[in-house]
Length: 304
Image 1 (cartoon, rainbow, N blue to C red):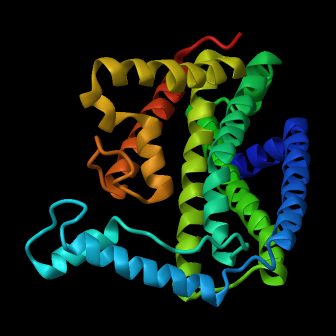
Image 2 (image 1 turned 180 degrees about the vertical axis):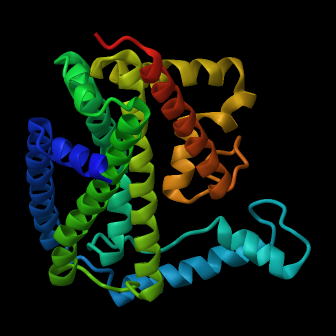
């Protein structure tokens, strides 16, 4: 625990963390201001009752045509036929107002940015140690290498999880006033709030894994750039190349399983039949393997 506390303090004292914190805060505030301006513009653009009635009449007419087979064959069972037609029809009048429930979509939209930031933080934490040759000095204070690495990994994971939660909380806190003032709170019930909390924790959990992966790759390569380069090459080149040559391997891709976990949607990829739990197991397994490899190499390598 003492090692963990020391590593957390060292992580928080880094200049990169302060710079990134400032950038994140400014970005959230700027996005909140722009969102409020857009919400104010759309405040009076709610669908009128006449538009809603016209949409309902049009939907009823099209539903009858679909059930009659005018647009193609439908199931013989009446209820199945109705469900089939309704699933392929959507005649809701567009509502441009800002809904409080849109916060879930906003957080999903920024989740990729959160992952990249935490990857960078994890990689730079150990990468800076190698670059400035402070590893040797650190080992004179704590010569037990495995314990030192475990403390660093735990510090990165805890820091990444908390930061991911804070970024999402701040984003939601900035969006909510605009929805209350200029939009609508329709649908923001207890079930929605619970789903929001679950999504926030999922994104934070994956963010912690991303921080660990960045840390492990930078430790193996003794450089922050190594982790960033490997990550970019894997996502942009390796996965796409394997997807073209061996599409049956897609269920084991790191990024695809990450998307399933973040969105909690097992059907987001037609080629993957993993549940959210199975996808979580895949990315946790990869993270654990990389972490063990980084610890094993660090334990036996020459640090001078």
